[in-house]
Image 1 (spheres, rainbow, N blue to C red):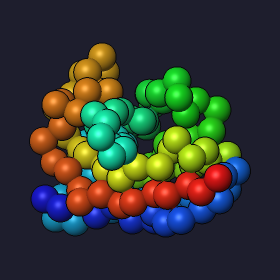
Image 2 (image 1 turned 180 degrees about the vertical axis):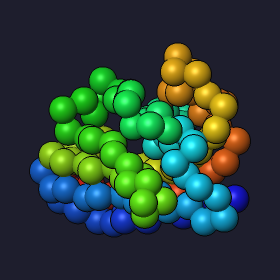
Image 3 (image 1 turned 90 degrees about the vertical axis):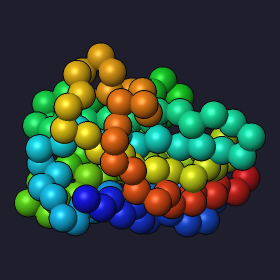
Length: 125
C-alpha cells in the first residue's frame, strides 16, 4: 500500500495548484482519502476529505470556497484543486487513506492508517 502525493511547488499569492494523490498496490476506490497540511511550528490540520464513493466531502473553513477535492477512481487518484492561494496556505501537504472511516471522523488525522510522503506548497506574497 503506497500513496504518492505530488503537484506542490512555489506559486504567487492568488495562484493555483493541483495536488495529486496516487495509489499503488491497492484500489483507492475503496478508501476514504484526506488531505492534511502542516506548516512549520504548527500542528497538522485537516484540509479536505472525501468518502470512497465521492458522495460526501469535508472542507476546512480556512479553505472553503478556494479548495476542491475530487477523485478519479479509474486513475486511482484523488486531487486537491487549490485556487486563490494565500501565503498562509504554505505547508507540506499530505494525503492519507483508510478503508474503515466513519463520516464524522474523516477530518481527524488519527483516523487514517496509510500516508503519503508529503509535497511542499509555498505561496509567496
